[in-house]
Image (cartoon, rainbow, N blue to C red; front, side, top):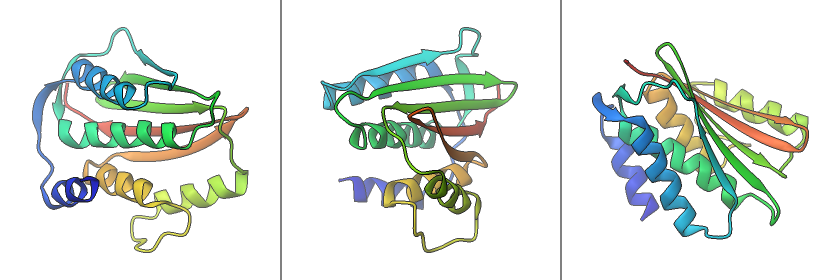
Length: 163
C-alpha cells in the first residue's frame, strides 16, 4: 500500500491549492494516534499561524505523516513525540521531536550531508522513508534537516507557501 502511494505521489506534479493547514495537521496527527494508540504524541500549533494557505497540501501531509510515523516507529517505550507548527512570513516550519531517542553526532552529520546533496542517488544513511521525504521536500522547494540535542532528535521541515 505504501509503495503504491509513494509511486503515485512521486509521479504527480506539485499541486498548488488553497487549504486549511490546521485541519490538515490535526487530521494527520489524529490518524497516527489511532494507529499507534499507546504513543505519546503532542501537537503545538503557533497561535498566530494563518490557517488558510496556498501550497501542495498532499505533499505536506505526506511529509508530516511520514516524519511522525518514523518518529513513532523509531521511538522507545517511554519516548514522547512533539509536533510543532510555526509560520514565518511565507515559510511554514514543522518540527517533529522524538524525546528519548538519540543518535551520534557523526551519524547526524552524515544524514544531513545526504539531505543537503540534491544530486545524490544512492544513500548510505537515509532509509527509504527519509529518502522519500527528501524527494517530496525538494519538489516543493523546501528544506529538511535533523539535529540531536539533550537526548532527543528533531526533524525540521520548512516549505514555502503563499498566505
